[in-house]
Image (cartoon, rainbow, N blue to C red; front, side, top):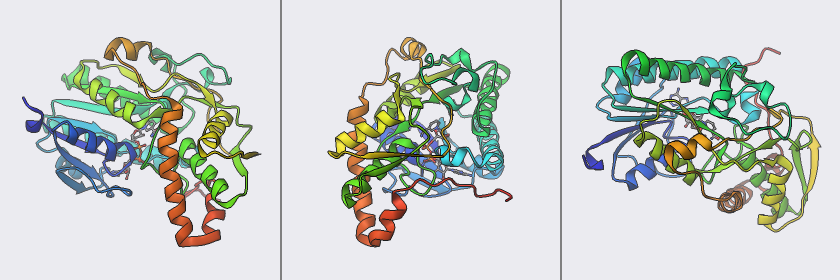
Length: 347
Ligand code: NAD
C-alpha cells in the first residue's frame, strides 16, 4: 500500500514533537490527521486535517481515531522539572484519562498499528542516585520506583499497552524518550525543559550583556539529550517494526547540566557566570543504554549535541529578540529566570 492510502493520526499534534511528526509524516506521503486541545504555537500545521479535541473524553477519542490505520499517541499534560515535580494529581489524572481512552478507542476503531510515547521517567529512582550512573536498560524499569506521578502514569500505560497486545492482539509499540529537544518547542512559561531554558537564559545574557545565568542545584546532575530529527526517525522506524516491548530512544552521551550550559554559551559566543540556586533537579543522573535500540532498529541517533543545540539556540535567540522588541527590559528580566509551576496546590 502506498503511504498516501495510509491514514495516520497524531495526538498531541499541537505540541513540540507532535507538530514536527506531522510534517515528517506528510513529507513521507502519508495522509495525516492531527489532534490536540490547541493548534501548534510556532508554525502552521502540515496535517491534512486538524481537530481540536480534549482527549480526556472517551467520545472525543473515538472521533479522533476514526478511520485511522496508525496512531501515534503523543498527547500528554507535561513539561520540564519545574512542572512535573509540582503537579502530580493533575498529571496523573489527565494523562490516565487521555491514555486509556485513546488506546481503547483505537482498538474499537480497528487501528492496525499503535505507538505510545513513554519516558525515561519510568526508571526507578534507586538506579539514578549518582551523577555517574550506569546507562539504563529497558529491563531496569522493574522493580518499579519512578520519581514522579508523571513516571508512574507512563509505566502503567506501558503495561496497559502490553496487556492490549497480549490479551487482544492489539498491535502496540512503546517508546521511552530520553530528553528530546529542538526548535519550536516550549521555551518559556514554566513547562520548558533544560535545553530550551538554557538557550533562553544564555540568549538573554548575550542580548542584555548581563552574564549571570541561573542553574537549579549544583548543576552536576547528568542527562543525555536527543535532537528532534533523530527522534522522528526513530519513531518512524519503531512504527514499521514488529517490536512490542518498550524501547529507549535517546542519545547515550551523558553530560552534566553545567556542561550543557557551557556548550550553549560557546555556541552563543559568550562567557556566562553560573549562579546556582535552589530548584527542582529530578534524579541525580540518567543516561540511555542503546544496545536494544541498535539491535531492534539497526540504527541509533546520529546528530551531535553541539549540532542540535546550534539549531535550537538560533531559533530560541530569535524568539527572545522578538519578545525583547515587544516588551523591553521587563520581558528580559522575566526570561532570565525559570519558573516552578504549582498551579493546583493547596497552600
Ligand atoms: P508537548 O507538551 O509539547 O506536547 C503534548 C501535547 O499534548 C500538547 O500540545 C498538549 O496541548 C496536548 N495535550 C495535553 N492535554 C491534552 C488533552 N486533554 N487533549 C488533547 N491534547 C492534549 O510535549 P512533547 O515534548 O511534544 O511530548 C510529546 C510526548 O512525548 C508526550 O507524551 C511526552 O510525555 C512524551 N515525552 C517527551 C519527552 C521530551 O523530552 N520532550 C520526554 C519523554 C516523553
